[in-house]
Image (cartoon, rainbow, N blue to C red):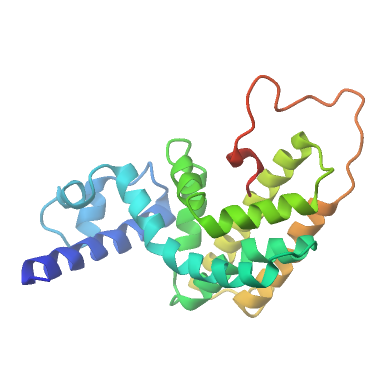
Length: 231
């Protein structure tokens, strides 16, 4: 790589780091490309657009920055879970790759809060979902979880998928925030936090389903996509 290429790579990394922090603290919508450029120490306020394009492209680049490391843990855990009929094994494959990645980063980290902010932004949330579903290991993990729960009605499956997403995103973001502020946390380590989170999510997926006389069909009028059934 030439000297110019090295400098460009360093600039891109500075922009990604600054954007992840600002988006985590303030939300994606509230932060301008100019603010990101300034926080990254770039005198040119168009640096974000030059290196990444749109804000959506920048969000996607941040997600991809973390994806490879999370995927390596997923692949390792998937190899252990293959063939299991235990919901807990598959839920662990969803949770621990993320918490191991967060544990490996220095404190303060920003990724959990960044992800939580993006998932609350209607214009950006599909970026994280689409990026996650490009993971071959995640697709196989979701298939394994679904095989463990063949009798779960589709409306309930979608509902519990949403609960899982909220639990994972916000529990990790809250713990990350507490660590950054030096506040005590219920669990001493990310590994322990993951164990508690897995316990809760398993309980969500295996809870009894109460029949309703007039339960609305949430799937009426549209096809079911993998986004509907994937935590």
